[in-house]
Image 1 (tube, rainbow, N blue to C red):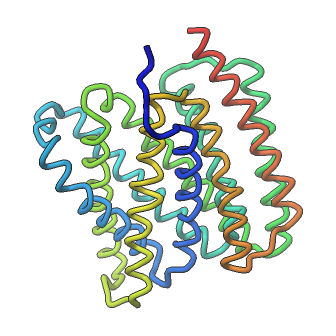
Image 2 (cartoon, helix red, strand yellow):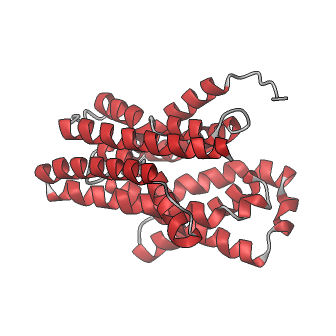
Amino acid sequence: MQQKTKMNPYFALVIGVVTISFSAILVKLASAPSGIIAFYRLLFTVLLMMPFFLIKYRHELKLINKKDWVSSIMAGVFLAFHFILWFESLNYTSVASSTVLVTLQPLFAFAGAYFFFKERFTLKAIASGIIAIGGSFVISWGDFHISGLALWGDILALVGCALVTGYLLFGQSVVRRVSSITYTFVVYSMSAVTLFLYVLVKGEAMGPYPVTDWIYFLLLAIFPTLLGHSLFNWSLKWLSASTISMAILLEPVGATILAYFMLNEPILWTQVLGGTIILAGLMLFLKREGEKEVMK
């Protein structure tokens, strides 16, 4: 029998989507370099998680074997460079283009599963993937007509999207042996260390930054990272993964609306058309995957 919950899981999904939609906005508002924003986002996240982790989950560190440590480190590295490239993309392209392109992550994930784990694709899955990729070309074509820099931002967003897929693929075996809290804490810690080394090598200043930047760093840690993704993880107890994946596809819609009102970013017809095509393709793709899970 399914557990009862005081909070409606669909309400939790709505809150989760709203909080992650602010991620790109907060990055755009901060004046610090991309690497610094990413570093402090992860550092503050780890510091906020640390008391809870040390009290309840530190014993699980003993369950992590050598192979899992290597996978966790690699996952942290991939996550670090995902943040760097995605945040950097926002310096060149719009919030609408960047966030829509990052939603292509499920396609990269299944491509990785095909090449590394020999998973099979149905023709419908391939067709829906092609539809989504076609939408990305529409967005990139529109951005190219604005400037080459906007197109460069689109490319950075796509590479960042591919990197988050690596982060997920490295972690999928580890989370079977330890709790999601322990895995998340370890990976975020490794990612923060990677970002610290990155900013040191680049010679970027750790400070001082305006007070508003420190507020944005903290807000990035609390809302999109801890609250947003934690609510999605919590919702998995009551809702299917495909339902949550569909909900996450609303992030670029929320981010685009917020950018229009908060950053005065115009919304281009190519972004609306390309974004609609991408979301339609991904919905078909995720719906098909959800049906496969039910059949299992």
